[in-house]
Image (cartoon, one colour):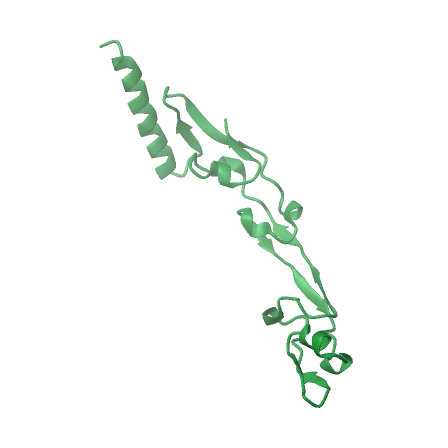
Length: 143
């Protein structure tokens, strides 16, 4: 019977954690029944550069700009094949159609294109996360 109060606290803590999670509250209870909350300061979207999909509330605004180098500008087989859309002809010329820089299908790999990685939005506040998701938001932790 000595462990009964501890067991009751544990069960109560688990019930509180379950209800808090089900209700979207950012709380949990540890084995001792102590309630924990998700806190901290979420890392801002601007800090992520082009990999901001890792932070809830942020979105990628990266752009590819410039002018893709024309196939006719390449004079060797090897250099021709480095440009997506170009192919070397047996006649010794490079031809084809390059993908424009702003075409998402080009992945900004074309010579002459430059990528600018930006991230915008508002990172979700730590207090909005439950105990199970708290550590998934950079800057947030259980307290």
